[in-house]
Image 1 (cartoon, protein in one colour):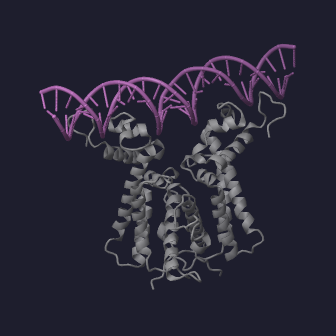
Image 2 (cartoon, rainbow over the protein chains, first blue to last red):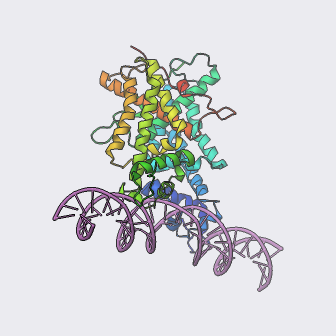
Length: 201
Length: 201
DNA sequence: CGCTGTATATTTCCAGTGTCTATTTTACTC
DNA sequence: GAGTAAAATAGACACTGGAAATATACAGCG
């Protein structure tokens, strides 16, 4: 972690700040993720991050970037070994939701409006990587009743977007505590119930 | 609005604060909605709201409550006069998304984690009213390929939840600026493209 | 009318936030 | 070793929401 010899210069402060942010998100939630809290956890003054990130939002973007990487990895993990088709797509969907459920604060940060205007190429790439998993599992699948007048390209785009819409909507409502639940708090319907079948041509 | 005779006591401060909050959301966005900004807009000190709301979150809940009422009304408006069935459901879905698009900051507040723990009966009622519109338009409709082993009651719940998941997911991604867009910024696919057809038995 | 509560609003203060500037300390290069 | 750039600190600033004490208005009652 930190350099053995406690020196004035921390060493690898940048990744340490990101890791501290991820830890705080997991332990204390998004509302307690502050620049000063991150710096304090690392053991450094609250102005130190300025040397590695333009602003606090830049640090948040870096944390979210790691989030998107893990998000993609979680989906990929569930998909491993499955042949293209219905089951593979459903496994990716389950992975999408599972990540959100297990990392609600991080997931909220990843889709926070604060990051919308951040022009961070790493963040964009990680987001695209995550979306790419959905793209890949949706490719070639067809939603029941393709839209009339849509060519194959548009139909592909439509399928991706439908899939994303469903998993994201479900994940968001889930971590916000919405939707019908059993007495013990677990949701009555899981993502695979809510998601309709795609056709395998 | 404000009492003619400017007196020490404002008059109807409570609704005035809610209205000011809605105005700020529309003009300056959620990130600029602060207790002090609301109070300043009304022309009172920042501690005055304490007499009408337990905390700032309580005021936010009241603003969100009005949001849910308008949200329900917007869906109801699009549904007016349509007989139960596919078109009615699609009109409600369009209304759900239209509201989010036209009131992005308010919509974000309505589904903000800050309100999740607020035990405000008015807020809960307004939220239920909004969800009730979705329930009512989904009632009796069947998703393609009903889930095996689900009774009619569960199938109804499933249909509602699917509908909510899709419209909410689409609305959220839309106002976050995600999803494929044309050169001019408008989305390539609208909610009615992304939403599959339900069956009309 | 005058007194007294009560509700409402103000003032002042406090701890917390991110950011800015100036300063100090360290590490690396010549 | 000296000079310079990088990396950290310290302190002040303008914000945030909240708490406590104070001031004002008004309603009810004698």
